[in-house]
Structures are given as C-alpha cells and as structure tokens.
Length: 228
Ligand code: SAH
Image (cartoon, protein in one colour):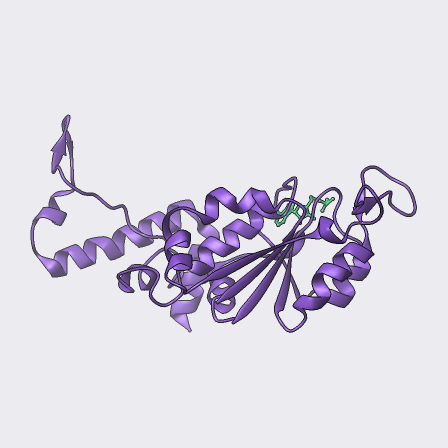
C-alpha cells in the first residue's frame, strides 16, 4: 500500500514513521509513505500558502494554488481530507481504507482550506473526533496507524486484529498476564482454570458488561443488530 501525505510540516512524521509497527511495515516493503510539502508550491519569495478569509473573520485559510499543484499529481489516488467537518472515523472506515492501493491524506492548518480545493480535489473528508486540532497531521497519523496494522503481514498473528474492540460491535474484555498475584492483586480465577469453555464464556460476558456500562451507544446498536 502507498500512502501520500500532503502537509506543510513533513518533519512532523519523522518520529512516528520510524518506530514500531509502521516502521516494520515500511521496512518490509508492505507500506510506502511519501510526504508532499505544500510549501514547495508556495507563492512568491516567502512560499506563502495561506491568506485572509473572504468575507472577513479570524485566522487564515489555505490558498488554492499550492494545494492544487500538490494534489494534481496525486489524482488517481483516494484523496482524503482530515477535517473536523468530516465523517467520524470508525473501524469500518479503517477496514475500507486498508483495501485502497494508494491513499492520500491531506492535512489542513490554520482555519482550514479553501472550499474549492475540497470540491475539486478531495474524495472524502474524515474527522477523528468531535474536537479541534491545530492541524491534520496528528489525525493523518491516526489513520496511518489504524490502517497499517490491518495490512496483511504486518501484525504477526492475524487473530489479534480479527478479535478486538469494535470488530463485532463490542469492546474487548480486560486482559491479564503474569504474575498471577502482585501485591495482593489477583488475576480472575477463571483465567487460571484451564477450562476453555468457561474462559470463553467469561470473556464474552465481560465484553457485554463493559460495552453496556461504558458505551451505551455501541450497546444499543449491538442489541438491535443481534435481534435482526
Ligand atoms: N476552523 C476549523 C478548524 C481548523 S483546524 C473548524 O472550526 O472546523 C485546522 C486543521 O486541523 C483542519 O483543516 C484539519 O485538517 C485538522 N483537524 C482539526 N481537527 C480535526 C479533527 N477532529 N479531525 C481531523 N482533522 C482535524
């Protein structure tokens, strides 16, 4: 898979792309990430990429020319704008994006980008939640990380991405590892029992309890789904 990132801060990505699972995917040739600096197409001596908003108001807006110049060569890829006004990201969207051959993630800054860029050069807008970031870079990293762990060959045991929170509409159960007791804190007895049927039943119950308690929105959908 190839992911192109369009940003005024390409160095933002140096650290995160160079550790853990993403680094492994890049080293293995499963993932390619290329960074496109909008400022390379900035205007004039100062390589300007933003300007004051028409109609007045606070802040600056990213201009059309540098963004068109950066995005035109990426036509043919699936071009996603990171935006608080986009569709909220969820696991189903991540699953879909992980099947795309060439994904482009566009990072806004300031008050956002001129609407004409969105109309002409963007296929989809995605938000990572109902809060406002200073720029789309952190949001793009969220997408890159969530997508990368789904690419075949990246996570050693495919079961660990098949069985996890949100896959079937439930949160994951609590997990424990050694030692069985630490400062009086004990691992639930059932997990030490070796009784796989009981363990399975306990896990299932925990997933339901947690989801009902913590995410009534997910729980409602889960219950509605199992009825139909
Ligand atoms: N004035 C805009 C916010 C701009 S924030 C508004 O009120 O909607 C600057 C940039 O950060 C945006 O263009 C977008 O690329 C990114 N951004 C901010 N919050 C985001 C979010 N929740 N999800 C995805 N991208 C976000």
